[in-house]
Image 1 (cartoon, rainbow, N blue to C red):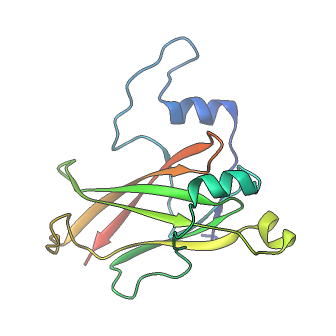
Image 2 (image 1 turned 90 degrees about the vertical axis):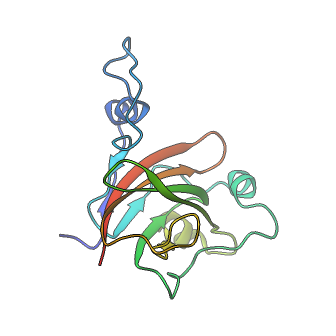
Length: 164
């Protein structure tokens, strides 16, 4: 399997992400199943070009950028992006309960034009704990990730991890 999965978005994909059967029949998506599935621990989001105003919108002054996986992570995802983002992650167990939520931000400021167009690496990391700080049981967990790229540009992805 390649080191990264390049994602191409079409009108049909965007309709699927929006939870539509067809243009005239919207359905309420299952939040556990909603979004494009990421089958690798590294993927590229190149659907949006770098935009400094959009970056300022999702990466306010004083924010920190997630440019390395956390040292205590039991699971992490490497994201190569051509745009700054704010992401909300819900960690969901096999009973479809949300056990943890966390957010992360990533900026592409102060990068060369070639870096911005080919993408810059950021990380999402989870320490294997629930929202109360307790370690979760071993098993399978799904991440539901809502990416906000600013300027009303957003995408939803999901991926699975095993906690050993």
